[in-house]
Length: 305
Image (cartoon, rainbow, N blue to C red):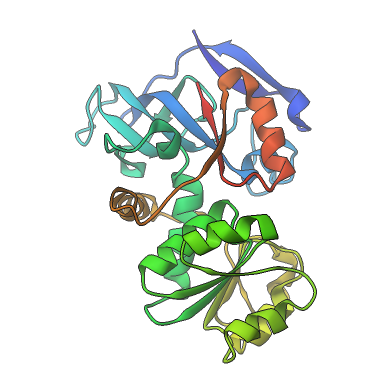
């Protein structure tokens, strides 16, 4: 038997239990990982609360988590890319809040020895999403990109990936996170009333593209700053679909391994940093989700089974 986090009904973190389950068995084309780290993402507590049941229908009881890093400890028939003992990271097929998880080798990459487990387990979801939306918006060298909630999970990756591509980045954030954005190479501005004017003060000609990871009413001003909706993309403002902007709900959208390879290369070059706010043991998954839901954590939250 092995430990895994499960819930039998939708609700708050009080619905979570850590239970003994039979070890998962890899099928053809799958590998099993002994999980060393599992990243927490806001979508996890949204799934728990039932907000995503239309997008992600579940047969209860169910588990949570997809960001994973671990050691391959079993391989299914036909697997040639990895072998037992390999250290890997990426996205899991089965819930990652567990001691063991299954994964498709195509969604994994090798973990460099210099990358800590805590960081490795925090990359796939937010990092893959950030890489994919930059690709969708075709952000290129010399352009100006505005990112709302730039100090959040996706935002911190998007800032650094865009800077690495030679873009100028303006990021909205609270006062306490503005120093972090400067360290990442962005120009920080505070959010709230007067945002358009503050952005124009540092970008008089407006911006070329916008990523909205905030969803707090920034869309009209973003369209104004970008000169139209074509290169404005939101991850959260689903009620703004009628404005003509892009709505992105597909995470890495099949780009996971490509994104992770670029992110890992930048980490090893010292050009991308992943702040880890807190770590929790598997038995404290409820507290980890509560911390994520509270927001403003200043970095990634990671479970360490």
